[in-house]
Length: 475
Image (cartoon, rainbow, N blue to C red):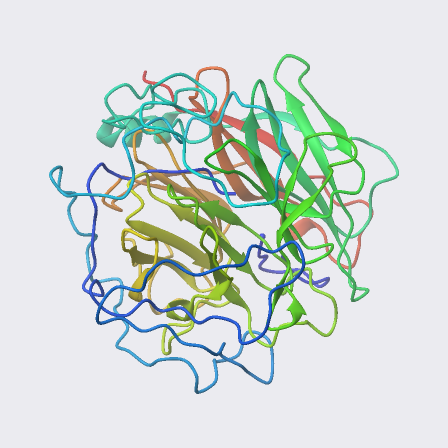
């Protein structure tokens, strides 16, 4: 995740999310998939094979962009193309449009089994089923789309939600335990609702040039307390795959790995290297309905010097090799320090946050990124193309297709067409870092926070971050 005014450095799950039933498209559709593949072999434990067939008239680059310093502009291997800006509206959803995802409760990750099994990318569940939760996907992360995602969703929408955001306030649930796991800039991240509990990562950011310690925490609403699950998880973002397994973005070893929600984690790496080097600091991740994995890799918690020359967004299709998504690097709209990621229910749109804003990308039926991204410019917020300090962190989309993301000290809420509805502000001085929709009824927004502006130079008296809940149910 990213921070605004700290001296010790900076950092950043996305729910399986949805926005509409039909496939949406941008003017980039029909252009070449903007990805590049590695020129060397993938790491042990990393899926290998052949990428999905490239659409006709499309090209895939064979070399990753390079740069002399992390986060700098990509090298000449990046394919140049015109970049759209926030004046471009999101294309309307067409109910008759064909999509690559079957109508099912795939987002209903609230009741599922713990992770485990083979470190292979998952195969989507059969039509009409859900992974945890009922046939409509209710009660899981993001609720979960059915054939009509919003028809049975218990979350408010439109003007009702906009009014709700003006009247309701977040409730503090729990602070981190008072124990020996302390020091540095403390961040709560990666919230994920599983079965009857919320799981999240606690990261203690330091300035010693090595990946910081992190542990896996659990919040049970009945116990009303945060408890330690694993003392050395090395994790940031957490996510459920379409088959119900839990995957973690791990800055400790630079991998994306399946884990069990238990003390030993039993990590099984999905991918851990690109171009012969470990990833910098995998931050957030999301699975497309077809099982394709997208994840961000800024250098917030990377070893020094960072192993990768550029901070990138990556894509990994089932049976394929990891690819850098060059569309996220194309000048002049380079996503600086890519962070939160989300894919809509229909699999047609990818959202990516970064230090300089929120970006939308079109995906084809095989989850290839098409063309370049649109930098969103949201009226009523600090998100403007001209603002280079927008800091978009965790992103999620609920069963009513509303979009939520952490940015500059608050949670911003948009409707499915990216119209600003309002915001959720947690009590200062802490800042929101991420958000997850879950709870027994699938109507609770769980908000993780960091120490905000209270923690500079490892001040031991700084306010500890808390976990908050926000009621999104119909009035």
